[in-house]
Length: 225
Image (cartoon, rainbow, N blue to C red; front, side):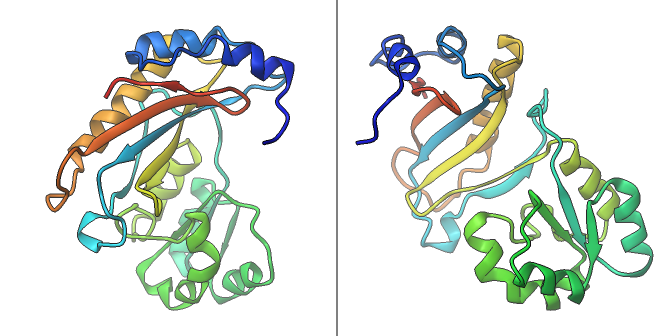
């Protein structure tokens, strides 16, 4: 086990064993000792789905009511007028086969990749690179689209992507420690409601099994779900 800092151990003492409602959990988290930087607050949810089955995949994108407190670096695979639209919307890098080659060479200085449908012939070969990091463009996540202006501008502003991992967990940022507590509460509740709304019809048993809230350098606080 890694050695924990005195700050973390002090914060751990404030984390109750029993699950809390969202508002109480946020208050507890905000009362923990803070790191020297503005930590990201993250929600983790264990879902009762089998990610190995395509009809139980939970994946998508949404904009939280109060954003996540971070400007994302977005790239776009596009050509011609669509490339110009992406640049105008705030994409940090725009290209086609050349951009795919740059990524194959090891460049990964971006958070989100957007692509027009015709560019998937170049993006497809990046699956083994972008897939494990959750950056592979997908129509379901809204990152494969002809409306690059909307897609790029929304993700630059903090729109988040989420995807259930191999263990059935969804991890997503819901703000910063510097946020007003009520804004974090509203972001968390919004995301929980959204995850319920996209429950796969093939999922059986208890769908939302566990949830926890944590900051970058803090222990987690269990939520009632």
